[in-house]
Length: 224
Image (tube, rainbow, N blue to C red):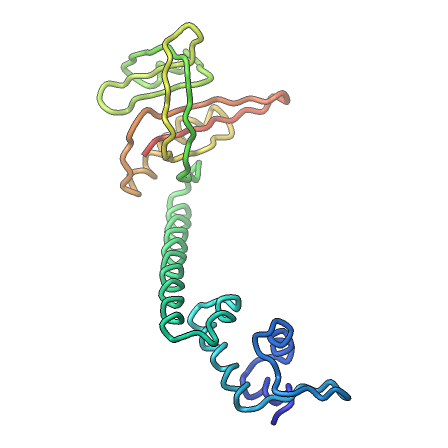
């Protein structure tokens, strides 16, 4: 039999870890001296501890391990398969994040877009057709819709116009801190879409926001 320090040394863990395992019921000592409080461990406990550590190395959490230590091997394999799927998804997400960081450092963007879900919107608009997007600057709309496929068409919020419903949709969103940065942000946003091979699936929404303190921002939503 070994005291806790000896087992910790053999297994390469801390005594604090072993005490935690005892408190949570994950690894109970073989015996406890009621006079001294010393914990005593044997081969069975060492074997169980190695099993715990092995499952940790396979990516399982202590909560999952507690349910699997005495379970059939088929359950353990199924849990490892599920964990592997999760780990691969997390690795892919980290790889994508690293790629975004690399692109940002190579070619700094004025915005860092994100993909999100936009709720359904009901608007009253007046439709426009212009030959160049720069013509819209004179309209100065609070809300602007632009159809980017084919002939450049747009619609601006107008209480006397037609009703238009935008369904809930997946969008690439960017928030621009100043209206003056919208043109640059638009170019950067389309470059980002091209790099990610994303196709525009509907009208883009440009919404100008202002608060009582005079702060301004522009939200750009492009459905993909």
